[in-house]
Length: 190
Length: 117
Image (cartoon, rainbow over all chains, first blue to last red; front, side, top):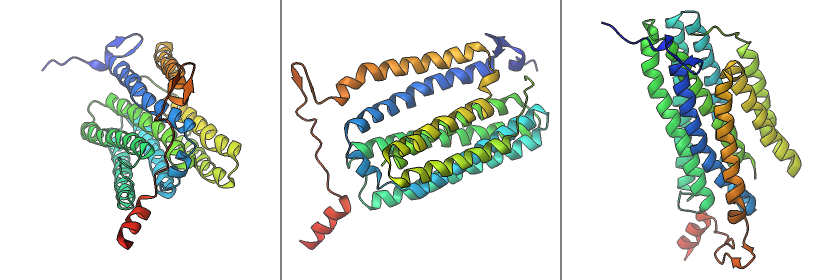
């Protein structure tokens, strides 16, 4: 069967797949950037928000940051393995990255359950609205990344479509990068 | 697939972890400027390390940098344009009556109060 070879097609000096993922990230910059910019404006205008931030769980936030940083390491090592043509190794490393994503979401679920139990819901005040919206949107991206990574890993195990390992890796690092900014904004700045 | 120079990723990860510890410990001193530096300054350094070494942004074509740079510039423009309206309570000929912040009592305290009555 004849199939188009995306890896060899190039636009603007880079493979079309990679070009597409950078465009996706540009849209993500506007989604998260707009949200964070709005949060920062309100946070700077309302000193009382520092008091609300004291009720977020810094231990859960720190642990999740460590988990995401570690999953980024396995993602980039998977990319390296894919470049070396070692599909099964890339698949294993992507599996570790997926595990990191699952741990992240699980910790977040427990964290949110605790906060909701204490009465801090998305309706409590504007700080908590931002908190649940920003962290929730980010968690959705983590879940989407894990699901897509599952398909990429399955193909990589058979040595197929190895260029996709790099693409999902770039997406995953971006998700990590967003959390790097969400963490101090929601947990540390009190 | 392009051939990349792969740095020592484990070493970069270790640096990121050390920076994470500093960003958590720094604000414990409760000095505002130290909090800003350790929390947000370090976040920028961490983001740079991830973008450069993990996303390999340094070896991407100039086009990609322009793409990302333009989106960030527009984001800054959005911030600059909207911030005065959002952050100020009043200006020349206008005032936001609903702007005053009303402290919302601790939800669990509210529950306790409810139970005690």
